[in-house]
Amino acid sequence: MRLQLLTAAATLALLAGCASYQSKPLVSRPSMLDAVPHVTIDTRDMPLPELRSHVFDPSHGLDMTDVAILAVLDNPDLKLARDDAHTARAQAFAAGLLPDPQFSGEVDRPGPKVAGSDNAAFNFGLSFDVGSLVFGPVKRKSAEAAARQTDLNLLWQEWQVVAQARVLFAQITSNARLVGVLTQNRALLQARYEHTQAALAKGFTTADVAIADLTALAAVESQIHDAESDLRKGRSDLAALLNLSPVVKLDLVGAAQLPPLDEAKVRSILPDLARRRPDLIALQAGYESQDETYRAAILQQFPDITIGLNRQRDTSRIYSTGSLVSFSIPMFDRNRGNIAVAVTTRQKLYDDYEARLNAAYRNVEVILQTEPVLQRQLEESNGALAKLKAAAVDADAAFRAGNLDELGYVNLRSGVLAKQVEIIKLEETILEQTIALQTMIGSEVPVRPVVTSAGAKS
Image (cartoon, rainbow, N blue to C red):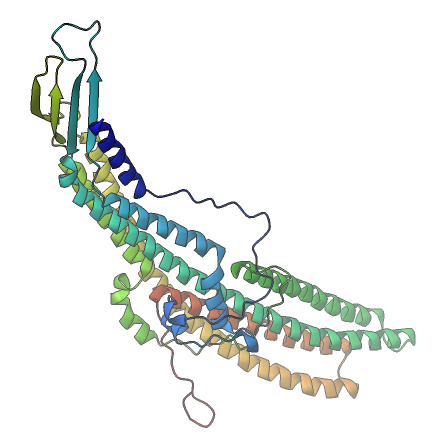
């Protein structure tokens, strides 16, 4: 009876420290937000320094940085990545726990009962896996490094989401400008086409002139349709990135422009790239985790020892206390298979890190070499546009005076439009490359100060 009471008390004590089940039913309706949340955000937890210093205030519309902050907070993919990080930390916690001691018990009753013997015999034992004290610390280090890798991968994914939000903002802004330019030209070409149709009806012009006007008008309308489709898609993609309903109308404000890059300052950052890029640091943590796994595999080629104590009594009422030791004999397996897997896996992680590091430097170098070319093209296009606009003003006066034919005038206006579209696309490309570079180097991009017409720097 005393033994039963002790067993019951020990069982109740163990159950008191156990976790209890908590239900969490699935939702039956979409959880997308129906409006931009007007909340106070502590930007100190943001993944990039330029986000931490920004004052979030959506009441005046969303600028490029506001959009990036909202993306970090509510992006669905980041929520899943954070769940993975929580799981990795839980696995690291589990790896640091010692195994529970093992209790074994046996009660035998003789039958039929023999005179002079007791009515029961028992055998109770308590054992512990000593090998966990040897392998446990190494496995715990491996799990902790894996958890750090998951946290760093989460940080890198946050950087990617920030870049994606900025790119979508830039694309939306660019397409909105493009629609505005194209709409202005369509109004001009529409008026010109109506004037040509009226002149054709009166016999003052020929059909080929009217056809040229109609062709130019149709081409502009086609460009408007494409730009409007891109604009709608960009807004839809941005809403999805922010976990907003597609019907939410985003009030985007502010310009999407950055000054030219400072190539020398960017290059000065490159030697520190492996210590500032989360994806590279994550690969280092993954390599460390696998290296510890390799160490554990080496240790596990030696016998795994279990020790214990037992207390027993037979039916003749003789009590005895003993000890037990069990271990595997490393004769055939010797954990050679797991060691081979650990070695090859570590080599793969080594090669993966080397390739990623080379790609990181290469991608930055490509942008640094491409950016001056794009800046030169943009400067040349702006110069050409200024000349075309001046020619268009003169052409308009000449056309009204009858000194320029309709086809020449339409071709000149089409040239102005084409150059405007080219400039908008170039500016968008430069901005997207700058955003990509900012993600690659992990900080605000060093830029050259812009010199105004008065000679002051801004």
